[in-house]
Length: 249
Length: 193
Image 1: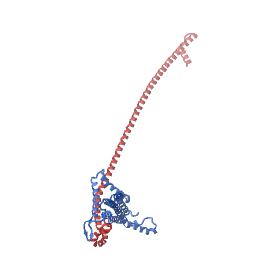
Image 2: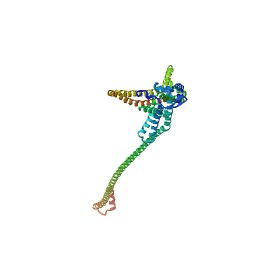
Image 3: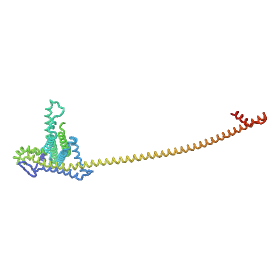
């Protein structure tokens, strides 16, 4: 069991709740969602509570994350896009903190479950669709008809555009989910080698040095991936929101 | 926010089906099915994601982001204000430099004016002195000329008298007798004219 690399993804019920035949239990996943939100919220809240004119280190982190996401959104979607800033910032912080919490041994990674990433990406695409139609009406459909395409090619291009639009929630969610899942499995497999090899005496312990080194290296890589995937998720969200704001390409 | 519950409802029938027979399967599934694809855990995950992410969104939107935005705004204002103040001070310094330079220029001008005045004064004095000397020289010249004229006229007058006397004496010697003085004088005058 200890060497099962899949074990870390198991969901265990902490407080069983069942409503109308649905299993809505408070699980370890729920607990880590709460922890993610609590840590991110508390950090942002407490570090900025002094409202220092000259920021301390921690306040700087909060301000930098604010300005980082703000400039990302402004670059991708323009000033009008800033109405979505709380949404994009929440998404970024949630994914970022969830990814990082997941890096601690024995901690559950919320974003390693596809249903979570899929729900988040559906939220993004849903926002794009609802806001797009609300703001532009049927003009939002211009998104699927790029300008300057020969008339004969229009049906083909529209089909491609529709498919690419529909595949967005899938690619957005699978990218994050697969990165988290694969990284954690790899890490667990190499760590498992260390314990397995070290059971074979002195030679085994010497041989375990390589997987141990790999574990350390992959941990470093996973830190990068955790930050990068949160960034990618936020950037793509910004670009999709830009489509809702300016559908005419 | 509005998508997640909708999705939950969409997937609900499938969930229900699975769930009716998963009372035991879920426990057993912990061993068998790959956890991320275990659909029996989906409703719970979606619900708790909606709750936690929804609260997180509201908290950030209502509390954290306005605060951070405010901090950054205040700082930006403060920096702008400080820059303005620095610009003001710079302009004041520039004004002080300009005033100093103007005073310097004025002082130089005044000094040169004083110099000029002194030079002019000296020149004027010299001129006046020269004129006075010239005038006195002229005066002396005129006096001398006048004296010469007087002497000349006196001498001429003397010449007339002498000529008349001489003529009268000559006439008397030559002619004899009494000589009419007035006639001799008139004749001498006529000759001298």
